[in-house]
Image 1: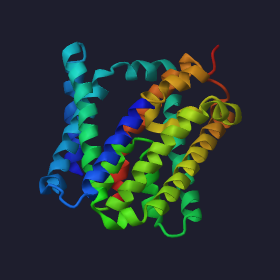
Image 2 (image 1 turned 30 degrees about the horizontal axis):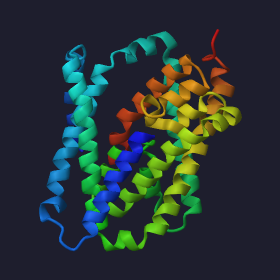
Image 3 (image 1 turned 60 degrees about the vertical axis):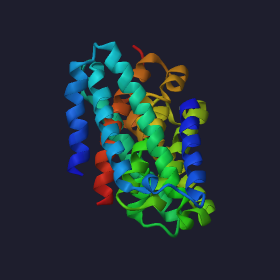
Image 4 (image 1 turned 120 degrees about the vertical axis):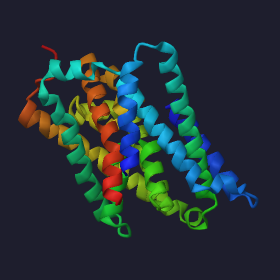
Amino acid sequence: MLITILCILIGIPLGFLFRHNKCIVDNVNRLTMWSIYALLFMLGVTTGSNETIITQLGTIGVQAACISACCVLGSASAVFLLDKFILKGQFDER
Amino acid sequence: MKGSLIILTFFIAGCFVGHMDSVPTWLLNDALSTYVLYALLFLVGMSIGFDSHCWTILREMHLKVLLVPFAIFLGTAAGSIAAWCIIADMSMHDVLAVGAGFGYYSLSTVIITNLGDPLLGSVALLANIIREIITLLCTPFLVRFFGKLAPVASGGATAMDTTLPIIVKFTSERYGIIAVFSGMVLTVLVPFIVTFIMT
């Protein structure tokens, strides 16, 4: 856990330092994309070689859809209440 | 949308490679994906550093803007608990960890998988991709029924990048700024919250 946090914390000041260097910004964006692709591919390999997951794919899909639908409704209701009772339309254009 | 389809393609391609009988063993090595994850987190840190107007927005809109990601966080947790009541065979702990991805599927999936639960990792991948797709498709309805902050909430961590164009299109520039800020806060929080729930 400590290493994951450290990785982000080391990146922030470095990013701030090089924020005007277009070459670095572009390369960081490209590298981010490719490391996500690489990770998801490796994740797929792990998933595909795991028999339990393959046999339970239907269940997983239903569970995932249920969780995301509930999270969307829950967070949308939360900001609705926030706007109605605390912010009272303060973010609207004046 | 195109981005998430490419990512999904990579994942599915990986699934097929993994399902073949002769998988190269170095691909199944956990250490490799852990190092790529560290590199990714470092890069995410750098892109947060690139964007210096986060602080300007905060000053302009006062501290009340912070209430938006906070409300999204609480609402998502409440939604996860509701989902846990519907799904019989998952622990509350697991459902909360999946929900805490806030749509940031790449990071939350990898963290959960690396912490030793590949099955839950796949649930997290699908659930968070679906959250992004719901935001992309249902923003007009969300705005109509829950107000202009709703797509920002639904988008979660993706409100600062992939779902931002659609949010600005159906609300306004000002809500776009709020979306960037809220997405940024949630993006930073995802690795912390997911790791915290899982350990």
